[in-house]
Image (cartoon, rainbow, N blue to C red):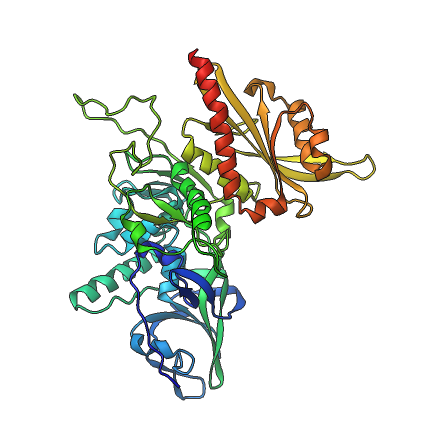
Amino acid sequence: MCALTQLEALVPIAYLRRLRVGDVWHEGYRVGGARLLQKSFVGLRVDRTTAEIVPCGEPSMCSDGVSRHELPFAHFVGHKAHTTSHVVKVHVDAKTSLLVPCTELTRRYFGDSGLMLSRVFSGALAARTLYDVETAEINRSTRVANLRLGPEMPYQAASAIARIAFDPTAKKAFQGLVNSGVAATANKKPWYIKMGFPIDGLTDLNVRGLWLERGPDRSFLALQILSCSHPFPFEKLFYELHPGQSGGSSAGASEQRDTARGQAGGRSGSGGGRGLDAGDANQDLSPLILDAEVEPSDPFPDLASKKMFQVRKEPVPPRGTAQSQSNDQPHAPAGSPHSNDAPRGVEVAATRRMYLGGQPEPRSLLWLREEIAYSLPEVRAKSPFGAGTASRHLISYGPPFGRRTSAIWATVFRYEALEGIGRSFLCTVVETPASPQSIELLMFDLPSPQALDREMFDRLALLSFVPTDNLIREARGSELRIGWTADKLAERDGSDLAVDMVEMMLDAFKRVSTNGRA
């Protein structure tokens, strides 16, 4: 039998969000992973009385008085060279423990953004690179918080940074992570993350991992945290991007651009998705935003009830200086041929979904809106009725004695070449399609925003619930442009759809611009 050789690879820290313990990678692509069990710890208490940080390589006393290792080498052959790494041990009951690697705690709680991770590992003053420490404030009675993010911090990181800024336990955990790096650097030793849970109190924790038998005791080794219900320290958060930084939607949008192009050009594997290429970090591109393909979309369900608002404040140039661009010019993405900004490298960020009444916005609409915001910054997206970029509507349909009610989401995309001269499109997305062959997304050409009244909206919305074979006939006279069923949308992962939409809108807007100038 030949001996196994342990390999090491250097990758940008931004990829930590995608590198989960237990996954198997081959030539830069995730091709599989360990067979893990899913376990829910409901009402788990995590505090100083139940949780402790322990080195993986040190034995601990079991209930029978025998000292045994937390991670037996029989199960983890490759761990022999890393016995000084740390896990957090949470005592569930007298004979049961939960073990969570500190690396996984960092990945889940501080890994919403690769740029945030790069700052987290930047050294002793890491906190000051995440947010403006002097201006951060929270009203403890109303739990309304105000936060200015650090340079280049994207909007996806706002909630995680707010946890660090306003939760003492999270701040202590974060500082422990930073201190472990400072100590490792000073002693010229490998940096093994040492931090506790950034929460204090009760939580429902959903994890994937495996059971380890330690004599009469059992430990569940959680290699992946799926969700944590512990509340965030704020009820309402007003966050501001760093002065001079573009709005959040364009930052999040390139995630979908990468998914579309990466999957089309990359090598397929059982893990799917885009591979890891350290060379991406040096290319002259806008931030490359990737999403972990098999991550849960809502790892922190508490955010569904919280309100977060981006405060937009345009930077004021110093007196006597000229602005490089007039205000009516569209913003050029950093790293593009039209930008003078320095290349920003790789960014791995979490997708954030909007909630109305506790319901998450359909991901296909999120992808589409952010892709359009990235590719066509002149286009404005708004709810058909009221404020916001999207709205949720309950639609009743069917025969009088068997009517059903379903929810759809809607956004109107508007481009104006000149004042009063432009083009509008209505996009509707069914929240829960009845079947894979049911219609999920429709796009309509509108004569004008004013033409869309409630009667017209209801008439167009009903087309989402007609049989697919009858769509073309039923949609006559409605200026239907694109229709997608749920299975086709899932098959193409929504990304090609966004490209089709953008190309269609670009063609339409070019004609509007030409006619407007004429």
